Length: 285
Image (cartoon, rainbow, N blue to C red; front, side, top):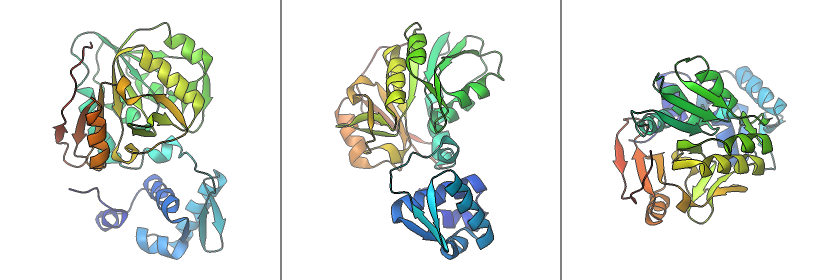
């Protein structure tokens, strides 16, 4: 079953504003320009509402307003987390639910990098006094601090407003002093040649610092991230143990990662069913 389009969701009920704005940015990145009239018909809201959406996005320097529409920025921008969370929401929840099954029942330390899928994973974590979470993501920390049974370790560092992550030498110093059982890593791109990648070189170094302290490394990424490469490499594909993604992932990209010896779990973003691809066996707590 395919992921519902914006039009299909509109027939069932109008998109919430964050989802609508995320869809606008996604379509703008593909087409280069959009017209308010077309958007109004597509989303079933007034042109005045769409103009307010476009103005808000322009104020964040995510697009350029024109008379009657908008143009994409000439640079390949990184969407802020608040808009990424609204894209492929059900797929990310399904990935998160599957990822939580990797947390063993005994006392365990997990690591969570920033990202919309890891943020969804944090919301699915059980209330357990024997669970410790190490994270550099401010939004994840804000969710978990309200759950006192979970021990929370937040690394220091300099904040990145687009990803809500703390990065840099301070974060890396704290990560170098901890031991992590399972690290769940969010990425902006993953393929065999490019490895695990993200938009920011400081974020890449901090995420690698977490990855290197983990006995077991699981990448959580929706299907749009497979076959994609961005600026900064976090690690080679061969350094991870498992990839959990959804059924929108390109089958050739999945096959290539599987051929590299990585366990691949494909989750149906709508039905929550899984298909575990052949993988290498690995040790880990």
